Image: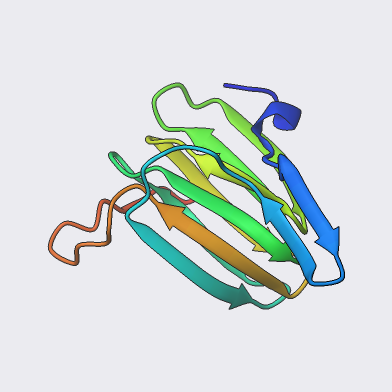
Length: 126
């Protein structure tokens, strides 16, 4: 598993001018679902893994602590995400986020959600 520093995604390009700001985070991949949401400080999201779906989780504002566990090896790691940082949750990697500030986020999924086959498997880390 990559080190904590290597896992955190940051914009590769930022444009700031009188029009506003634009941050380019990703230059590749195939994404079938784009989600925007908010979480309040103290809340948790995750405690599960996906067998087929990659998930990119990117904080627009706020902060979150992340716990990751490879469900095959049991290797566990933690990291902290701040505004304008993100991570890609790999397949078979259980993950839970604890939001330490009110947070706005964007989430991209490599597979669209299918209620008949959700590809979400409980694996609590908290």
